[in-house]
Length: 152
Image 1 (spheres, rainbow, N blue to C red):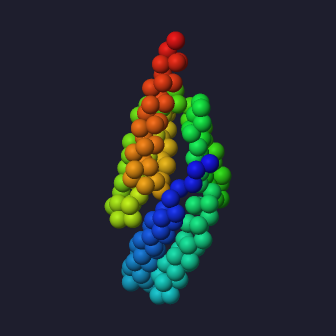
Image 2 (image 1 turned 90 degrees about the horizontal axis):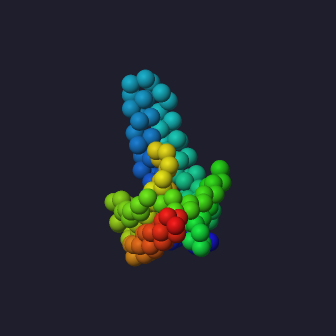
């Protein structure tokens, strides 16, 4: 199994910090409007940040993907382990994406859209820009080949 780029941990920690700031601001507003305890905002924000650090590390260690002969295999999840198999013949299209945080640290994601119900897409985060492009192109080639074989 291939692992994600280690910098993805920073992205996940930064997202936790942003969530902590929003949560803290919301709870502080709750203090002003609803008379919630003033200590609740920094305590909740601090807890999110403190838990976000080890959670990002565990998430990184549990995330992996592998391209085999017949399908793309993914393993991920800290609290709930998820194993996904995407046969190449089910791939509809593949995108590369970079949100502002990923761009800032030089990372990208590859999104695989499959035939099936709504929300049947899988995102592989924590790839270098070149790695996301290479993965996208390779998956596209394998999907085309699998479609040709299936059409026989």
